[in-house]
Image 1 (cartoon, rainbow, N blue to C red):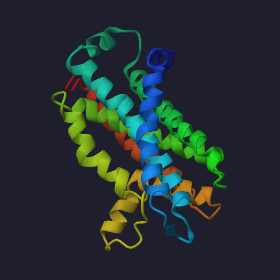
Image 2 (image 1 turned 90 degrees about the horizontal axis):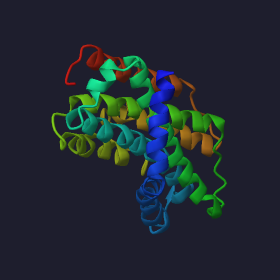
Image 3 (image 1 turned 90 degrees about the vertical axis):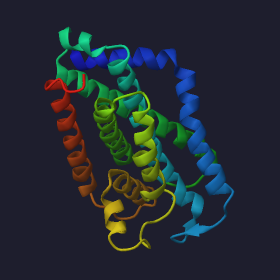
Image 4 (image 1 turned 180 degrees about the horizontal axis):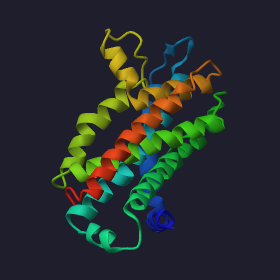
Length: 243
């Protein structure tokens, strides 16, 4: 019930700011599609670049929306509203609070990704997005929601979360197999970027969309990232670190 309580809180927040959240989820991905996909007419992997771009943009949208929905909000609650004092004395278990935040962020990310898929329907791309695609996008959202929880605990002031986004989230948005393939990057850099969760998600989503072979090990890879971030988040909240 604790997880449901947190999800209900996020639902009320989503319902209150529905139009703001929806428009914000559309602007950046649409600009990417218009500028790179339709403004730059080129080919990639024997396909029109737009067909390469759409799966990557959907994947990075789930990352950005999931991370943004949790990190900034929890940081404000922790530093300025002192809301964690209420969490500590509430009937909701601490692990349920964390899981509720992670699930809520993943749902927000999946919602943002689905908006992009709806917007590109008129383009008749022929790309395939099935149940496995949505499961991957949801798991990707959970990974970055959990990272958002960790960052919200690490942040020492209001500016730290945007700085983290600038240093880590933004580079991943552009480099992790979203706008271009990492195949031609130097050895070492290519492997490092390929191991990041967004790279794994982008590659798998694109392979499914193109109906090509892909490795189910991506689920395991993402689950490992999720477990690591959850363990760190639980350590912070149970040790009452930076609360």
